Image 1 (cartoon, rainbow, N blue to C red):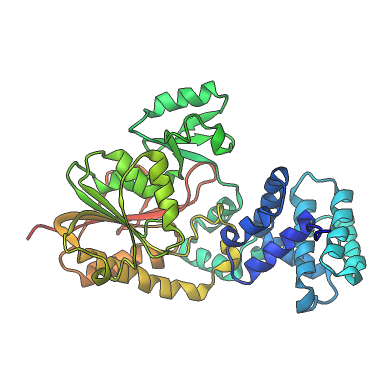
Image 2 (cartoon, helix red, strand yellow):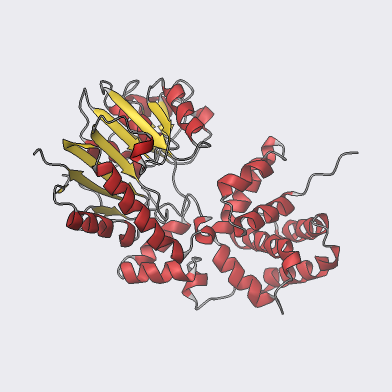
Length: 433
């Protein structure tokens, strides 16, 4: 007899344990999903994402219901109760099923001595309802440091940012301009019974009313369309692409922007896509293959130009730097658990270093687009201000666009529950000598 597979809630508790220990959901969730039949996988995914999204609120409630914290060795049961509280507060699951199945999951985690505690805590939670919290970190379900930083940086906008972070992100598509116009693809979606509308700012963007599996999208496998947020799509227009240009996509994985710029201008001389991660580059190639596009892929640290650059300068560079990802929390709620305030200063150092390195390989007359999916000024317009102070041959370009907030050195987008993620863009040009 093989070992019995763990119940869904026990699997979810173990995934959350892995997140607490520093793994992202994209790392630790796939192995757990692989243990389940196909029809249970969306349920596990929803439990893990939902519990991470509301973690700080649920944690506040759970700690208030426990006489003393559980021992470290029983930490999985702590997470099991968070999953159950998430279901009681935010799902349509019948409460008796949540209680019964959580007790069974406690046994499956080899903690039978804690079944009485689990049962008692959840029964009182069901009976008493969710507590009112005066604490903003619990109320908005964000870590204290992130909340305080947002209040400080955006005194008029912090609440809107937090609420957008807690909303589920819409599914947005980028139509492959080599295959269809946006209007043509909207018709195809309509024929397939998928309700959709054009995005407000990205010219090839389409937002779905409800997410669907990609295999339901017309001609997806044949490269008609890709899944990409509207904010990420805006980089293509800022690059001002033209035939014959040599273009670099630094920090390219998973390849959405690489593919977008190849779709936008079919006669580029060459597109070089670099990423430091050997694990993520195959994903870039898969996207290129599906869309029937060609790029030169290189595994390297973009900042270490001596290790990979061939000496031929680039006309255009897209620099989407590693960042805190605080603009995409709604898509990756585990960021609330993984990111630390102490990460921001080192990230800013990496960002400025990358900008310096990329500037050295940009042609005179060339253009560089700096991008982040962050809402922290430290990683965004302040980096551009620092760079412009130390770089006398850089000119800031103010793009003629209707989106984002003008920060004096780039444009800031906040996450919008009805459309795009949080993003920052700045456009720089290197004058001809």
